[in-house]
Amino acid sequence: MMKKYLHRILNDERAADALPMRMVVAVIAIAALLLLLSSGIHSLLENEESYAVKAVISNIGSHAEQMSSKGAGSIIALDVDIPSNTKLVMGAIPGQENNWPSDSQNYYFEIDDKQTIGESAAFYSNASLNGCFILYPGSHTITMESVRDQNGKIFIVLSN
Image (cartoon, rainbow, N blue to C red; front, side):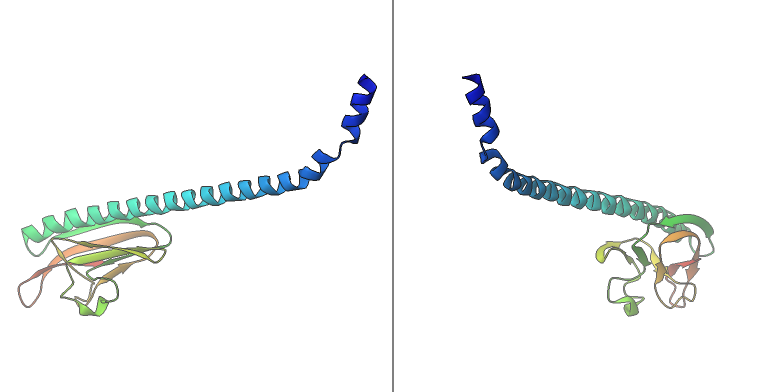
């Protein structure tokens, strides 16, 4: 009886027929999990870059507000690190960089074509006092100087 049972199990092809289908289902499930995992990791990295840029903006903004309140003539140097795939623009809003000085209190940063806009109490300018200041990825030492323009408005001039 045991021999018949073993012979029947060894000759049963139902499991072998179902094996390819089970492998396909397993591969699809693993692919879906890998896709979700990579999406989660990408989102986490983007949040980390956003946090790093917000820390840089906070550092610049706090110094700029103090310098503005003291009047013209203050100079300070800051070391900042802009993450890869990131652009920081001080003194403009996206797509309207030529509207300076009307947008000089605004700033934005762009990470992988996703833009985040903010507003500051200080007015920002480039070293020529004629437009916004742009920082690209990498380590920078920026100089901040409070300057009074011909209308009496105090700008924080940024240069690197």
